[in-house]
Image (cartoon, rainbow, N blue to C red; front, side, top):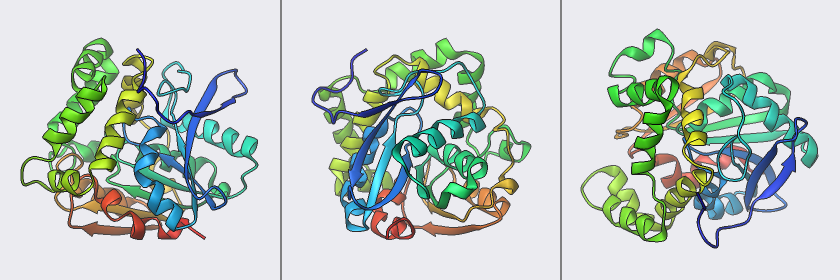
Length: 294
């Protein structure tokens, strides 16, 4: 499956096991380095939505393709904790000492994994509407994780072909589909619809990143989802790096209650619950990215 025509070309490195790892850069090329981990199934092209606020804050935004997404080679199913090794290798090859981490939605658990496993290399973590650890018993309440979220995670782990077929049906695969979804997303009275009306380019960038994330087929996005649904390999109480957590009070995709539960379990978390939907981090990017800049 091909990706978007004319998209920003990624940068690539070779990891010790021979795999390629791809990323895109946005913001200030000479700014403070920050690794961005987009939501489920999205490639590093998602960082385009944050180019201007990152540049304004003096941030060099390194927006990653996780394994199997965009231009990064896939890996066999593995624990979420194992992802941190890829990021550490990228930092080493780029000559980066201390970095910030920025994540949205299902990218949140990946950021926490890096912060836990290479804490001496991470200055601060900023997460918007991060996914909770769905394998934990306390997430079984519908106030924390919706039935749809749990169902998708179970399908990704136990019925990947079915999950892949469903994902294929809901992911844009052409410029026309992207524009149609942008129009549809802006309808209605929800906070996310208001965001799409106010920020059509950011909405378009997020959809293009989903398209690009599926360029190798649906298996990469499904593995990406399954890793978050499985046990992570570490507990929230073990993440001692400072975390700034942003969550929209009207978020219908990841419940604000999930954010409250997660932040009470993180030892060094500062929570920001604000008016907005799932993209509250993007709507308030200038403010949210402040701890990551120079």
